Amino acid sequence: MNRIYVFTSTGNSLKLAKTMAKGLGNTEILSMARLMQREEWSIEGEIVGFIFPGYYGSVPQLVTRFIGEARNIQADYIFSMISAGRSTGIAMKTLAGQLEERNLRLNYGRSLMLASNYMSGWYYSMVIPGEEKLNQLYEQAEQSCRRAIEDIKERKDFLDRSSFIGYLLPLILSPSRYTRDTRPWDREFSIGDQCSGCGTCVKACPVDNIYLDQGKPKFNHNCQRCMGCVQLCPQQAFFIEGKAMNKPQYLHAEISRKELFQFHGPVDQ
Image 1 (cartoon, rainbow, N blue to C red):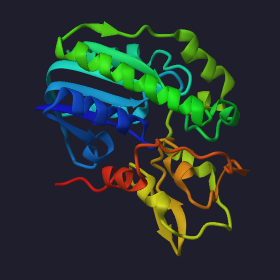
Image 2 (tube, rainbow, N blue to C red; image 1 turned 90 degrees about the vertical axis):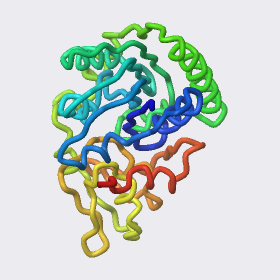
Image 3 (spheres, rainbow, N blue to C red; image 1 turned 180 degrees about the vertical axis):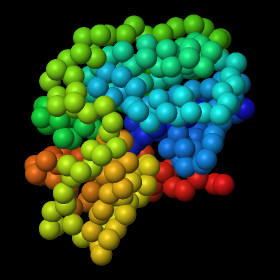
């Protein structure tokens, strides 16, 4: 049995995982965030894949913890696919180093450009693609997946080159350079009067960081800065540092809200 471990918030990584699983065959797709609800977890498979978005040119904290704290990791061959709105920076190199710390080797890795979902970024409205460009990105991602499937079946070795500039620029241009621990980041959130108390943000959060208190979202300060709650809010009621997040919203065109919410659901014990 092959297994693909996924961290996703607005569907890009989940769609990539579904494409890869179909092509490889005999492959199970698992949520990193759900597995981490357990007291301990293992990472196992003949072929093991890690699919997730790059965060500021590096690896999300949740992925780092998932790999670093796993009780056991067993795999004959390991691959990764990392997506970003512009550059994955040194994420692939960083992931390879994290696996080396567990005496494992990242055999194969590809970076893909898809839509950015980082709505709080000052640049967001300038980089969110229109429908035509988005369809082109989707097709390019499909082509990359098809190539990766054939390469992985042949057990080829390949890693995309890392870009230090793609890592350095986001740190220079964004105040996130001051935030090494994302968990308390939700303290910057506030909720506008247009909130209907629908609970969409609760379902959208992959780490159960949000709950409703008298019909209004409250936060557990375990934020992963994935932007799922902000992107999927039907009333666009989120404010970050007092700024309204009434910008174009994003969800992968081939991933429904229902499917995403089910993927984020409680882990089977």
